[in-house]
Amino acid sequence: MSNSHDKKDEFNTQRTCGLWLIYIGFIIIFSALVGDHLLIQPFILGIGYFIGFLSIFVLPFVNQKLAFGKNTKFQDRMDNLSTVLNVLLCTACGLLIGFDDLRLFWLSIFIAVGIHFFGFYFSQGKMMILLGILTIINGVIGILLISIPFILFALIDGILKLLIGLKMITIKRTVNVIPQDSSSKHL
Image (cartoon, rainbow, N blue to C red; front, side, top):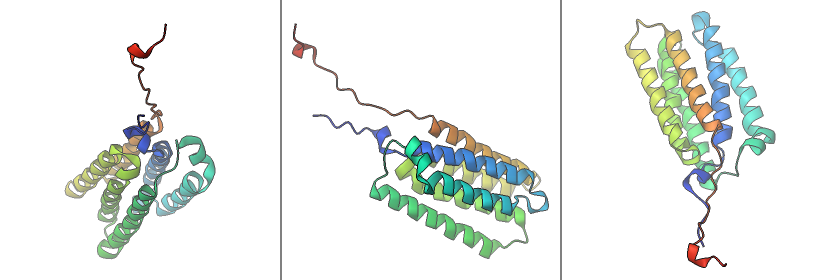
């Protein structure tokens, strides 16, 4: 008997994560557009993050509708470790960089978030590796090219999340079909 568990089926919550990325991409773009001297409006980002996290991940309705099943315990553990890593890295950005250079602070946050995406590979697949790499590159280029306005890098960050999220939310469930041997057919 063949195992019907195929590679794409291992990432049961990709569509839920895709919705989250679309949502947070919009929040980043909006908070950057109204950020003014703060570059990204932290109140809008924080409240937006909280509302989105609660409605997409904590309340069961969205995940029940979008997910193909539950994550494994290992996947949940890796997601939790990645989230803790993100909190630690973002806290380190605040402590080490401070808030005197907001451009450097926010670009470092983008890099920290990019790093934490790698841990989500285990529950979301290769798209998270791609998102992590692109997010880190965007943050590093923003740090190096100080003559380019910050808003461009914030928009790129949000758009990257939107595009990857759109790709993830449109994933279809794959079903393995066991081909019947033509010699076993009865006439």
